[in-house]
Each structure stands twice: as C-alpha cells, then as structure tokens.
Length: 202
Image 1 (cartoon, rainbow, N blue to C red):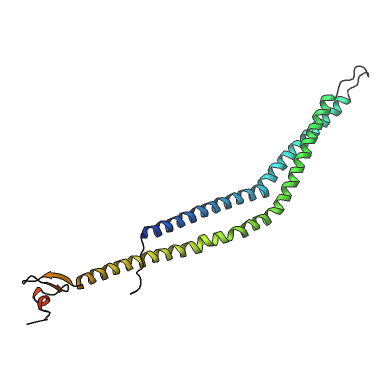
Image 2 (image 1 turned 60 degrees about the vertical axis):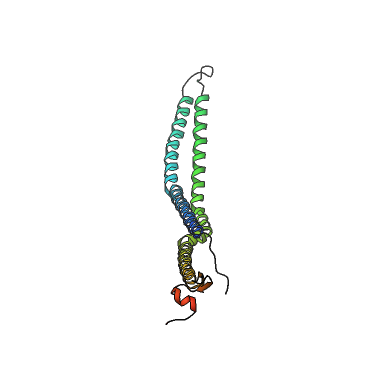
C-alpha cells in the first residue's frame, strides 16, 4: 500500500490564498491611483497649464506696455540736462517685466512640447504595467479558484481518509478473553460466540 498524502495545516493554503488576494487588491489600487494621476497631469498639461500661462502672458504683456509708457513719459519731460529726472526705476521695472514675459513664454513653449511627448510616455507606462494588470484581472482569480478547489479536495480526502480509518478499525481483529482463560481474536462486528470458535453460525 502506497504512502498516504499528509497535509499538516490546510489553513496555510487558505492564508496564502488570502495573501494573494490582498496583494492583488493593493496592486489594483496602486494602478488605479496612478491612472487617476496620469489623467490629471494630462489634463493639466493639455488644458489647464497652457490657459494659465496665456493669462499670465497677457497680463505681463500689459505690464511691459505700461512700463514702456512710463519710461517714455519720463524721458519726454522737458527739463534742462542738469534737472532731467532719473529713469533708472522705470528701466528696471521694464526689464523685470520683459524677463518675466520671456520666462512665461518659455514655460508655455515647454508645456506644449510636454503635451506632444506625454502620450508616448503614457503608452510606455501602460505597456510596462499591462502584464501586471492582466495578472490581477485574469490570473489572480484563476489562481484563487484553483487554491480553493485544492483545499476542498484535500478536505474531502481527509474526510474519506478518516472514514477509511474508522472502517479498518472496526474490521481489525481484536483480542478477547474467552471463558476458559484463553485469548481469542474477533473482528469488529462479530458476536462474541462467533469469535470464540471461529464458526459463523449454529
């Protein structure tokens, strides 16, 4: 007779199955949060950020015009060379406005470049995470069902093994003290008088 399969603790398989499910749920949540962030950044780069920069550019263009006008008006004041008013502050204000305008225009240019390149980067990310998504959506449920069936089969095996053990115990010969002091053997379920003389009936 071959060796019997022994499983010390079926709960170990159940715990492993639960751990696999929890891990899949954690990865699924992480992927969902990443997708939300990707959608948010895509919307920001394509719509929100350009609109915001354009508003700042228009305002800064107005500031540049105002600074130029202030500088021009200061320079046009009629006065003697010795009493001519200083235009240092107006020039500095104009330079600051021009630098800010150039910075905003550069940011808008970079944002447009990012908007063009972002879809390719998103595609690379999705190609890298698709195997994990497939594992979560297809493989984990299959593995979980397989482990559940494994536990059920092992439980059935243990139940049938226990039933076989009880049946063998019932049918196994057991020593019995006879009336004359000798020891006889009888099988489980035999009547005492049948076990004593080995006969099966009167």
